[in-house]
Amino acid sequence: MAGLGWNMGFDELAPETRKNLDPPGYDASVAKDAPSVSPASQRKKDSGMLQRKQQALYARATAPIKNMALFCFMAWMSGNSIQIFSIMMTFQLLSSPMSAILSSGQMFPREEDWPQLDIITPRLLFCLIQCGQLAFGLWKLNGMGLLPVFPSDWISTMSVPPTLEHSYTAVPAS
Image (cartoon, rainbow, N blue to C red; front, side, top):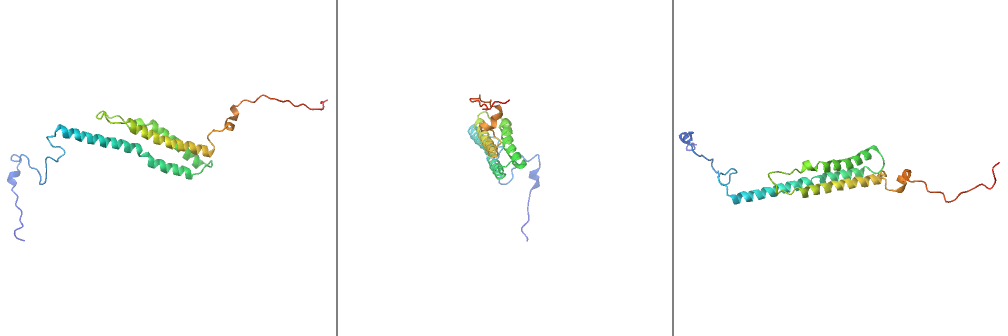
């Protein structure tokens, strides 16, 4: 094992003599905090960051599709009979999209650093997906018979029609 000794000169590592000592394999042009960045590469970098932020917004807008599919399947499996489980499931089908639509402003905030970022389209896509879940909830209510869509559901508000005929007894009552 002779000849495998290491040799390191510690005198050149003194703080007053060391100016810029980079580790082996370090490339200053690849470093994130490179001191000299051209404006063209900065614009290209900003364009890439803008695309990544836009993709993240669309990913956030389409994320509820997975949950919605599972939730709608669970509601479909609960049946159309009027039981506490199916009523709670239907209430959840109606309340969660409403609260999600109302809180979409906090989910898609406008960033001051990126004024060219399109926030309206992902927010509208998010609201459209939530409206799909709301429509399934209304379909579920209709299937359960809790949605008043027939005239007989509103019978208490209808007026009594006028009588067209009168019937009398043949024998006078004495």
